[in-house]
Image (cartoon, rainbow, N blue to C red; front, side, top):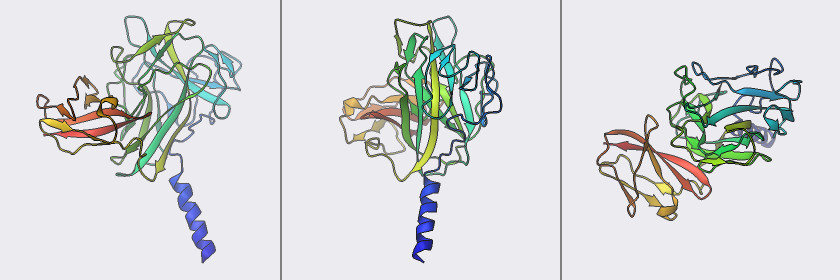
Length: 300
C-alpha cells in the first residue's frame, strides 16, 4: 500500500511539472535548415497570414543557419543542438515583426497557475536591443493581416527591461492565473515601434534580431509571492484602488485596453482614475520586484 501511494505521488508530481509546450527546445525537426525560409520544426510554425518568417538554426546545417556560427553571429544553444530566431525591429519607415506559434500539449485549466518562460539572446551582428518581447496565450491560433506589422494583441508575459546581452541567454518569465482553455502560445514583440524602448549598440546592422530557446509552460502550485504583490477588487467604476505590499511608485503600472492599445494613466496615491474610460475589460501590466505580472480589470 505504501509503495502504491509513493508511485501515485510521483506520477502526480510528474504531471504537475510537465512542460505543456511540445518541442520547447526545437530539437525535433524534419529537415536541416540551409537557406532562408527553412523553418522545418516539429509542432512550431509561423503565424498564419503574417508576412514575417522566423528562422531555424541547427548543428546539422552547413549553410547560413548553422550552429554555433551563422549568418546572424555566434551562439551556443541553451539546450540541445538547436534554437530559433526572429526579427522584431528596423529603423526604416515600416514595422518589422516575426512570430513563432505552437499549439500546447493540452489546454490550460481555469483558475490554475502556470509559469511561462523562454530564453532569448540578441544576435551578434544586430545593433538594436529592445524590450517588450512577449508571450501570448490564446484559445485560438492568432492570425496576421498579410503585412509585417505587429500583432495588435496584449501578451500575458512581457519583458519591461531592454535585453542587450549577446553572449548569454536572458530569461523572460512570469506566472499567470489561467482563464481556462488557452491552447496556443505565440512569441514575439506585440507592441508598435512607438511603444517599445530601444538601445542602439556600437556594432552590427541597424536591425533587432533575437535567438530563442528553452520555451516552457509548467503548472505551479500557487502564484509567486514576489509577483502577487498587488490586489485589485473587480469590478471597478470611477477608480481602480490599488492594494500593494510594495511601494506603489515602484509598480510601473501600465494600463491597456482589450485591443492592446496603451492607455496613459497616473497613480495618485493608491488610485487610478478611469471614470473617463468606456465600460469593458482592461489589462494592467505591473512590476513586482524583478517580475512582471498582469491583472484583468472589469470596468462597469
